[in-house]
Length: 395
Image (cartoon, rainbow, N blue to C red; front, top):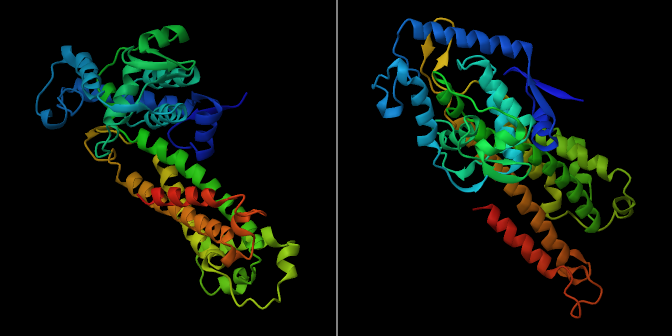
């Protein structure tokens, strides 16, 4: 049976989909295991030198100047999770939570977080046995990673909070017991390493951009069918037209449309008709869908970088701990906003083609695509629904 190995460097979008939607199991690779082990050793050396290090022997945020004695380290990490698990709203879907567990395990296995191997293995065990923490959808602002959502995730590791097991919501300790998983006790920095990262926002964006790739392909298919129904021409997609404006997305979409329409008898039958040119929603498909395609491709690259990044703070290197800002969600936020704009534009363009097809004055087809218009309303209200959804996309 296929298994995906995590090491913080080689996770792909397809791996993510396999794990989150198809329940493929994962494991910590030998390389990942070695890196986690070395990172923990480096952290322990720092602690032995009795240095004051943020998140290891200090308070958090504005309380970073408060030094915590060694005897209170476990309590510090546990209190951190309890105080930050204050999200609200409906639980995130199963596929998103599975993606979150995968991404957090992968980020920690990169070897710059200072956690024990047991932490990574416990995340993996929960994922493989489908023990899924209840993570509320609201509460993260992203400026310091997904603190609140990931705190809910981390509580399940220590047997607190709630989780789903086999689709049933219950106390985490009961879910772990049913799955045969022992809860963990946290040691220095581990609570902070679990919650200070971008795994939730990245999981949501990764699944979204994967679906957006499919949307682009489907929009090409739907667009080519619309062109046939409205007796348009494929001349606007000719290679020579594309070569004088070399946007890759535009060129790719025009190429795909030509392939889809290559053997169309409908297109061939009126190639030399009296119509001068098609409406924008047909003629400009390469330019509009192509622009959205380029956005989708760029967002995918952002996601592929993020899913193999160390995003907590502080980061642990061989001889020092460095407080930094890799937890900040700005790269993901910009990408998510841009993706929303691109997908919305595809929806707008599709809705306008639907409106054209149902309007007999524009399409030369029966009103609302029904033979007995008046007696039947055909696709009248279907188009209204499409318009409503297109408007909602703009919000």
